[in-house]
Length: 180
Image (cartoon, rainbow, N blue to C red):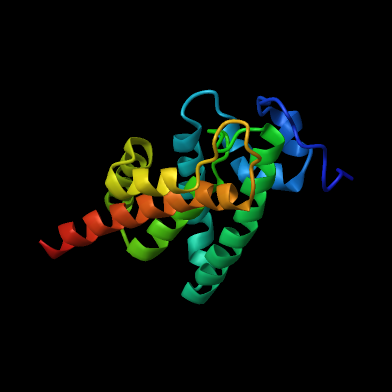
């Protein structure tokens, strides 16, 4: 059984399959392997979230989705903090639980929605998450740690927070579009 508290890295580590499998927090934070993609891990993690949503959606009620998202945020906060500490990087690109959670929230709130509406939600979310305009940039900078400072719980929350703000911005655009 893996140690629950493996030593914290002092120099930045590259996430690999062995790292992901070494601790349950790593597996969650790295999106069960989707964050290990060498190209666009955030996009791959969001695609994984979309596929998982399509599998789960028919089986979960709104109450169960709310519970899943709440528990996912709490467990994700822990997992992102632990994985970032062990990688010795404040917000590693391989950590994609933030994309997964934020995109699940978006899809849950826009459902029922057809394939094109879900694709539009995906594109808007990735745009806001990658470009980080306005409030998303503010949210991203709010919990950043300076080089050499330890990675704490605030930084773990910050990993999730900017993606949730990106999702809310994308949802606002969708709401305005639907209103027009």
